[in-house]
Each structure stands twice: as C-alpha cells, then as structure tokens.
Image 1 (spheres, rainbow, N blue to C red):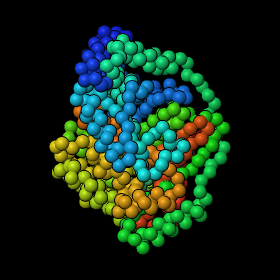
Image 2 (cartoon, helix red, strand yellow):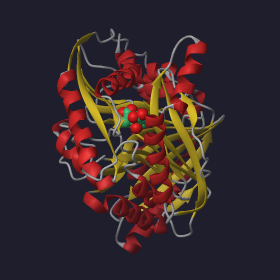
Image 3 (cartoon, rainbow, N blue to C red):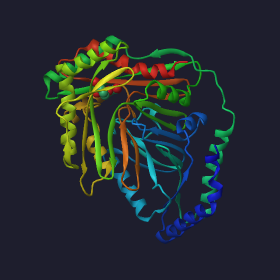
Image 4 (cartoon, helix red, strand yellow):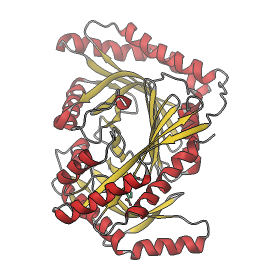
Length: 465
Ligand SMILES: C=C(O[C@H]1C=CC=C(C(=O)O)[C@@H]1O)C(=O)O
C-alpha cells in the first residue's frame, strides 16, 4: 500500500511532462500523447483488481500465462478505435501518429490495451455495445508488473486548450478514486446464486454440426469452428473480481483477462496466445484438438497419448499449423515450426499445441501480424472466408469479443495478443458464456457437444457461489 501512495511526490515532474505536451499540442494544433512512468514497490495486481471491484469502473486486467507480465489499467484517457475492414490498420496508423509527437518520460513506454471484435461484418448485439470493432485504450493509470518489478504509468492526451494543471488534476482524481476504493474496507457482498441457464437445446446445436458436416462435404471448406452461447442468470450481480480470482486459482496455466466497460465485463482464462512480440522476436501458438483431463495420472497420460494418436485431432491441428505458417510468411522470417505437436494441459482439458517462432520482418507492426493471423482456423476455420460466412449464417449469436484478439501494445512496438477463449460477458445478474469446437469431416456431433460442456465448466465453476 505504501508503494501506491507516492504519486503526489512526483507532481512537479508530472506537470512538466504535461506542460511540454501542451506546448507541442499548441504548435501542432492537435492533442499530444504524454506519458510519465515511475518504478513502485511490487503490487499484486490481481488483488488490486478484486479490491476495486465496483460497478461502472472502467478497468482492465491482463496477465500472461507464463506468469510474466501483468497489467492493471484504471480510467480511460483516450481510445483508438476503428471499424470495418480497416480497423487494425486505422488503430495502427493513429497510434504511430500519436507516437511521432509524444512526450515520454520514465522507465516504461506508453501502452495501449484492448481488443477487437471477432467479426466486423456482424452488427454488434446490444450485449456487446461499448466493446467496438476495434478498441485500444490509453488508460489514465496503468500498473505494469514484470516478475518482481512494478511501474505506475500515467497517460494523457493533452490538447492545445488544456492546461498542464487540468491534466494533472485528472490523473490525480483517478488516482484518488482508485486509492479510496483500494484502501476502504472491501464491500463483502454475498455470492451470487446460480438461478438458470438458457441455451440452444442440445439437439438443435447438434443439428448445426450436421449442417456444418454437410457443408464440409459439399464445398471446398475444410474446417469450421462452431460455438455455443449459454446465458446464465444469477440471484444478484456477478462480481468480476470474485470471478477473476476464481479463474486464477482454478487455472493458473491460462492467460487471465478482464475488460470492464460501463456495466459489462468481458472476462476469461484463455489457453491461447495469438502472438507475442518482444524486440523483433515473434511467438505464436497453434492450438486445436481437445481431450478431457482425468484425475488419475495414468488415465490422464493415456488420454494425452490418445489425443496425439487421434487422426481426426491431428488433422484438425495440422490445418491450424499450416495456415498460421502461411499467414505469417509475409510478416515474419526464420519461422521455426516443430514437426509434431505436444500436449498443453489445463485444469479441465488438454490440447494439441505447436509453438511457432520467428523474426518480425522490418517495417512490420504487431497489429499487422494480429490482422494476418485473425481468425486462425482454431476459432474460424479453413478456408477463412468460407468458414466466416458459415459461422455468420449458422451459429446464431453474436460472438462479440469471444474468440477475438485481446491484448496490449507499447510505443516500442512490443506487445502480446491472446485469443478471447474460455470467457464470459458479465452484465449485472447475467453472464453469457462461450465455447466452441473445430468441426472437420469426421467430427461427431455428440462428442463436440460434450467438448463444449467441458470447455464451459471452468467458467461455470468460477461463477458458482
Ligand atoms: C473455440 C475454442 O477452442 C479452440 C481452441 C482450442 C481447441 C479447440 C478444439 O479442439 O476444437 C478450438 O479450436 C473454445 O474454447 O471456445
């Protein structure tokens, strides 16, 4: 807590940074990005997220699966958005534009975090209002933790008509709001009791799989991923903090994320990295092919071996590897692609997984790679346009940010995006849960349905009182 109260001591420097940005903004006649970072004592960012768990907070939490970087963002200073086909490019261009004149101070560069809608061609349903086709936010306060090092980043967009003082005040107001919530006694609300679930009846969903199998037989489409949405209702508002804490303890090997926007929170524990970029080194992951886990280690090892030996799962997986490799080729060199997959174990499921590494080509940005990869056949299908059209016409609900790229990028071009799987959209007493499966010609509708149930179980457990 001591670590979190030092901002006032830096007010002089903070004002100087904002003043410099204001002067540039006057010269350029447009707002200028200003960021000020300072090292602070290590803070448990998950605990921070849980303690400031109150409705209407604009907050973000993100934690890498390898226990690497965690982020906690509070308050929105500015947002880069985009719509339609150009959404990745337009965020990229606006970000580059801001960075050309930015005033940056301290040991961490400015950083955006947010996400992209799964399919920009589908109109957002009312549940997903506020999330956008592309929405990368400059959070007013961003806490970054890498291993034991921790930083506080204050970010603002300073306009020509602003004063440095007014910008400082905004940062301090957010800071005090955060501290008030953090330091006040936690509001202990009784846990929400699960009331009921609504979803497409099993037979109807399985008939969609039969329809997909027909399409795989009758067209040149080779794979399509179909998902289910389950609308769960609870006795009272579901707490994002409590849910996130449970996800963290139930599945420590997953990426954790929570995007709080107005009354809603998109939350999850995803096993799937889309792409990580660190100093030009690129890492991505092909993840497809699933089996359940078994509490008995011997049985569990047998299930893993059966997954590796299963022709259907190997085919489903190989398609993902092949497409990721070809999608990356224009953007990355020296690609290393292992010939055989390994097994990635999570608490409830195990997946076939292949780590793919390479070097980013010059003049290429992280968002160009994200755009090239999304949607991989692990969440869309192959051929991509055919599969997307099939999902659009047959799935029957709005995926929103489910199965979409979520993550962060910084002013040095580094960043990481994951795929928004094993997730739910919380809104008051309701939670929409999502899970899907890759359908290939020999898929069995009943087994696919059961696979979605296992994939949903992690979130269901986290939501349970
Ligand atoms: C689409 C999902 O999982 C994908 C990722 C891993 C394994 C998958 C599979 O085996 O079908 C899916 O492609 C989901 O969890 O909703």
